[in-house]
Image (cartoon, rainbow, N blue to C red):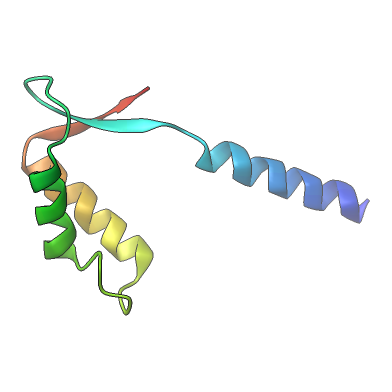
Length: 73
């Protein structure tokens, strides 16, 4: 029973983290490296002391403020 529970948890985690998403500009252009680097720098992406969830939320809002949106591939 315990093995089944662990297997279900592992499979759920794999499914949740396997989605493919790309960023597109409102004009349809893909995310530029300059905009990605700018948002990463502003949000502390390269700082090892930062919280991963906080950085992810910050990068998401930064890219959305630049006119980008997510598209499932």
